Length: 162
Image (cartoon, rainbow, N blue to C red; front, side, top):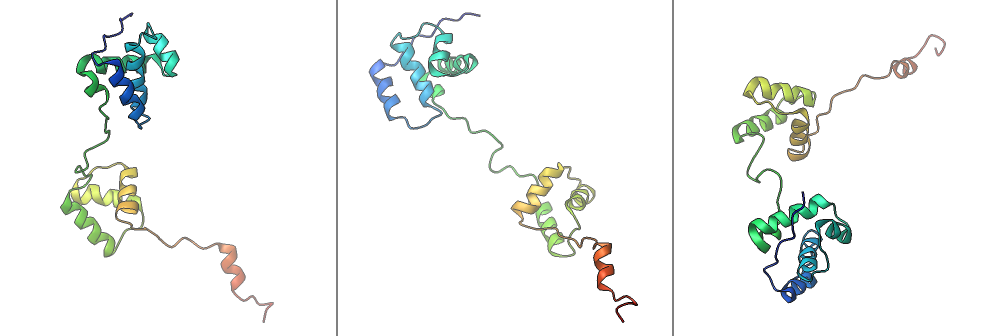
């Protein structure tokens, strides 16, 4: 669907000055798009996409942001992800997990995963449990691996050695 380019409200000189000062690689193409539109160097979104080496949907998204909220909305950076205060485990569950790790411990991450579900009714993906225990709590769940049968038989004296 064809949609005409918006009228740019800001003066061209101001946009060019902001473009020269902007250091963010995320925001420079957005400002450059406005400069191209304000200076009448492009006539369509397709030309803008070709000129800026961006996808036409990206250009459309930038122009929608500009139409809805102006320059401030266009230059606002999105900070994705969960809020910093959001945690996978509540504080009491985290303390219980730390106590269990310090005490008798666990044989593996699967056991931690099952323990959290059985004791605290917390259902987390295995990868989240691993990341939490290994990197956030800095615990290494190590267990004795079975020894090689050939290795143990070589170390035992045979009747020929005597």
